[in-house]
Length: 385
Image (cartoon, rainbow, N blue to C red):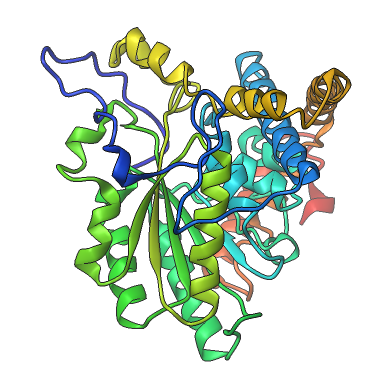
């Protein structure tokens, strides 16, 4: 399965996204109306400053994502997978991490990346085609984007087993966090990762952003039961959280990561959310889902519910809110400018940083490509060889 999408027309009677989960199944600390709830298993005590920080994260992440969509539509990016609607799942889970934890993302975790200190323009390099990735995974505790669906869960499990064997576990230890989508839950790699993680008691948390649609395939085509319940069959705990509730995502992920670091083994978090936009910019979701479904989920918007809570509790004034909006607009302008200023790579750089050690096949391909470039009159690539 690849990142590219199918625009298949909807089939009459085709199952839509899953019905809303039962209340007892869903961990929720902030309702869509912005009312705070307590949960006996997931206490969360945040200062007003921390709450304002989460709100700022959500707004800036959405503005960056919106600008990236604009850039793709204007030909500046080859493709863009939007996270619209999934900001709370990403920001909440990312803010639960310690600096030494390692994240293994898909290709849509822009909010997590920004929380881990990856600059927005670095995220654009891959989709503009000017680098193999754009950032140093070790520097940010955030691995490169994974295009092959689900393979990052195996990478995360292997990394977690390494943590275990190196003795980097305990109260102040490390853990891995692997993101994937509801569609990827049907991939063999994901299920194999579950087996390995369970059998070896690996310190890894699997975070499934269930956004209801695997391109044009609805959740009903992926599983007849809630995805979090699958964890029990592999021998580790699973929990379903309101993926549009940044508080709940933070509290649940914080507890799961703590358990992993302390040697309690893996767990699965299903963040029940919704993909408000297209799967990628070459997808047309109007061909396979109903507009009423989108309107229903707009009422659960993660930013609006936190803004309502802030207003209700008097945690910030108009100056703060307008200041965040202004910062977001400035970010959009910076991202647009930075994207257009990204330097094009020299042709031969495509062979750099492919393998850590010399590789005879890559060496042969490099020489053949150099010969091809030499065949053009006035070739000026010698300095790249």
